[in-house]
Length: 244
Image 1 (cartoon, rainbow, N blue to C red):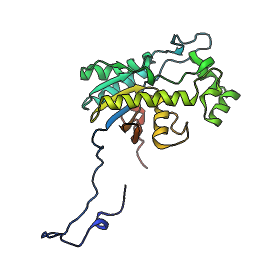
Image 2: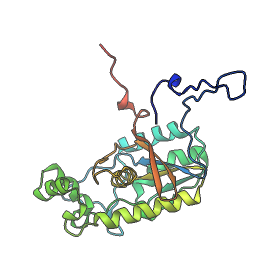
Image 3: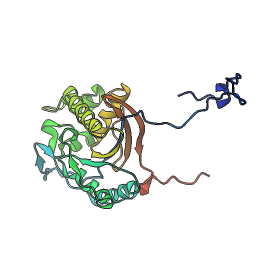
Image 4: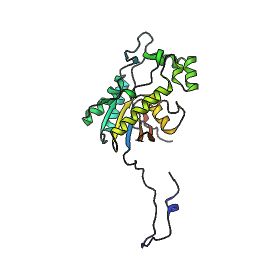
């Protein structure tokens, strides 16, 4: 977008009219037929315990929201309560449906499940082990971040497979809601993948958005543009300290 002063776009000719023709900067407007997709990361989930793995759903860890996560879900619901949403989507993992619940109640919408937007599969590190390995600086975790590849983890989903299913889901949802706006409650890895694909960035460039954050994509067919990333202005801790 051209950020020059509006006067730089003026033309002197009158084009047959009494006043000069001017071309002012305008606010962004999504292309006709595009869908706006709000990507909302689930609230904070319960901590992992070495002796108590998370239950699994189709092989993936499925923790519940922590108390903090439920509070974040309520704040997301309050933030989006006045928005005109056509649909709410969640994944098969319960932390997303639990986060979506306050907004769904406010809007009277029944969340729909979109399996393709579930979190990246972490192979042998599912069930909470991923958190332990990252926290302890495991060499495999360090290599994963250095190479920006999930499949450095034994048995984990490849970047290519993960990117393919996320893109397919977003394309399908955009086609189902042309000209509309939807809220998708999903996961940090999915949001990072969607935004990286939209910008051609490194795979982990947007890893990870905060719990309860809102990012925004405008999608037309298989083309996306980012309209917002990691908006946390509705969360209590995001209030900035006063300037001194």
